[in-house]
Length: 234
Image (cartoon, rainbow, N blue to C red; front, side):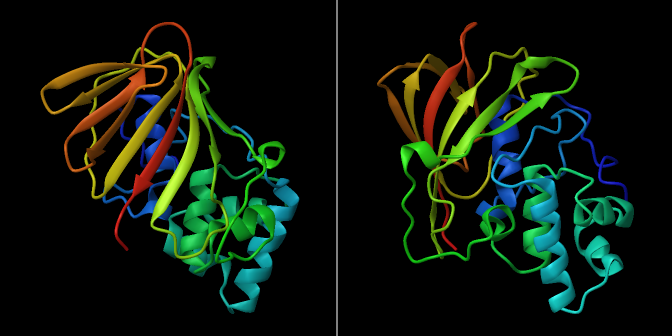
């Protein structure tokens, strides 16, 4: 199956796309279904395509798996997998997550080459920004995020710095296992929980059960920067 063939045909808000992007790492039930039709191929800044592909190939070969095996496990075509391993294809984060799951490795290894540790320290100057933008709308739509605990093993929480860009989107809510804590650092955020709608401003925070249908988006014409902490029992 070509990895673009699973497009849902509905436009989603950037925060929902962000959740989809990291969903396999976080065990969200509404699994990431490859958003490449409406989210463009922003670069994964933590590693060049050649290095990521080399690490994927090394692990695959050490496990005695063929490209066909990986294709069947991930739904990614063999031609795309071959391009990734040769460094000709810059894989989006969602694809790296699928490969990590198929190869039973932590995503951070393919990006940074480091094994996970019992603790992680992320210096301000070392945070890596991952950006995603709609290829049809350019840089006026999308999101970018920075992982704040990329190498901590057996973690239950996933902390991120997320920047949400203004977007006119169809109001599609999501629900999944776990809980979410969000602190607004800059701008204004709109959140919809069930039948309620709230605007949160800089300095405001919200903590909610992710099982409640919800939508989080930037409000207004200026980007919104948030600290998002996702939690789920393993």
